[in-house]
Length: 196
Image (cartoon, rainbow, N blue to C red; front, side, top):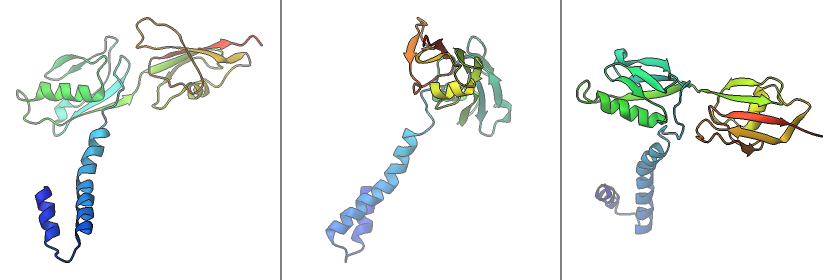
């Protein structure tokens, strides 16, 4: 590719060498940068699937392989040709790859698999909020936003004594948080009572 660009630049004899090098660098950036950006932002998020998530699986050109379903309590999903799939703890990218590999060869030549999260599992908030309960998770959720969804703090709420127990924490140890701490799906937030 470098030879191709060098050849193109050499076909313009009136250009000085510095301008030629600058154009070469700019051309390479224009060609290489979009691929780099796609690799960095190709939807391969860190979010891991869990029971309660609602997902859509599509395979381009294969309507029979379209599935929209909620993951079971065990984090599984029944999928055509592949049977019961264990999805608990997989990212969207890992699931796409798992399905693509499962369909490749025996069923399809080059499956184009897309997995979309339609609905995240709930997070829970209790204690000194006006409407405690479970709420649908939204990307970018913080404790402040979660409290807003729960209709705000009660008069007795302590804004300094808030704790989260994460679904992914095997020890289920409460962790102290502040209003700007992120919330994950499955988290249980407790707002303690203020003594003053």
